[in-house]
Image 1: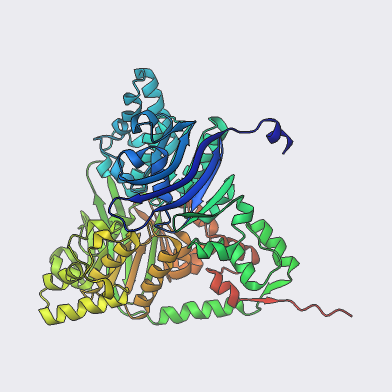
Image 2: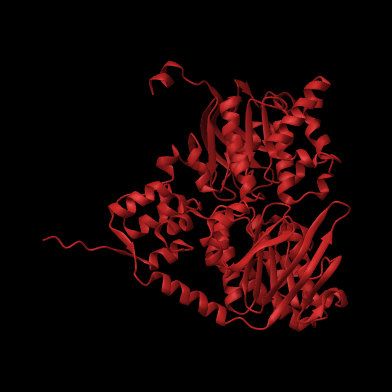
Length: 576
């Protein structure tokens, strides 16, 4: 504390009573935001979608008000410069912004050219530009992809490229708007390790908008936003222990903090080490028959599965020379299963998923749906059996109203008008959008557009649904709503195959987990068995959720807070 008083950090960002309303919007996106950020700090901003987080970012580099039009009151100063009086170009070298919609800032034909664009526009010498390209690619792990076209990269690799293109500018302030949404656990750790490295080595100021609560533990400050206002601002140890306020702001509490509060503990741990002490101090213990009850529950789910629905037999697939994506994949998925596929970016997850409904056909091997090779089935036949929800809902939405979008699938399958209308209504009621059926889907939040995409698949009445990262970009409230829907669909008889980088979702919802690495399946089995093997998960660069790691320390693999509550009791000490 004394050293901080002797060498106080200067304030590099000052935001004063900021109010902003987008042109044609009926309400303000920012409502009197005031915030000061010190040089060299890591500030994590959290909050639900439409809280104003991205809007706040756009005011920092001058996009608001110079390019994004609307009504702005209040002031934003970067290094003493009023952003109203500075153009975007003059702020270019002071603050770098990675958009939430990171693909919108990629436009070059090669990875290396993308990273070079910023330094070239700063007029730097060629040797300096080369050094910056090298450093940015090394920091983001993209060195081996420098000659690739951005369009050929996975979603996570594109996100890393957007980050690299901003890092090459080496601005004193970096603002990352949800920098890990499309990243696998390994690359999420890479980005958060990178933020710490930048703070230590370059003394850069970092503002990170993030949904991952556990990652906020390393921040200097956590700022909660809700409804265009700052709801809380303080150190992580204070903000992250208030689970009620986090949930009010639609932010996922830390699993262990949430567990101990619901257990009535007198300590609210943030880490596993703190949880172990609190477990003993509160005299908690697992029920003697906890493991047996969990095993019986898993066995009951398995007994409900039906016949083999999808069979993959030694499937290989390549996008071109030296671009092998699948290398001898074999698996069987039975009717009624809930399967998650986990793995690093570029491990082959999406390529495998696209084989399951015939979007891709294997270059070697075979994929069969209900016993028939996909090579001998039409798109219409496959569409009736296997629905596919893309990672980005905008890749499959194109109609002017929600109802027209959801009607499109049944009509293309030759369903009569009356029956198509009934199926569309049923699908929209299932996702809770029937009352909004006349709205333009592109005016909705990403979470609601994702629900439109799910409804458009449900309306075709497929037996199985493949969901490619269905929770990307959703806040905690939207995420829970989406997963509640997916769970209901599975319980009503739909087979669910889901790709996700959200590991706690895989643990808490899936019956079976498949791990992929470099185009191969490296593990496949019941979810509890997979998450019991943290060493095996680690080899696939996956870290088990906080609640799972803690339960493994206690000797029984528990997959969610809800399961833990059912398996825990408090020891009664009888004193003489």
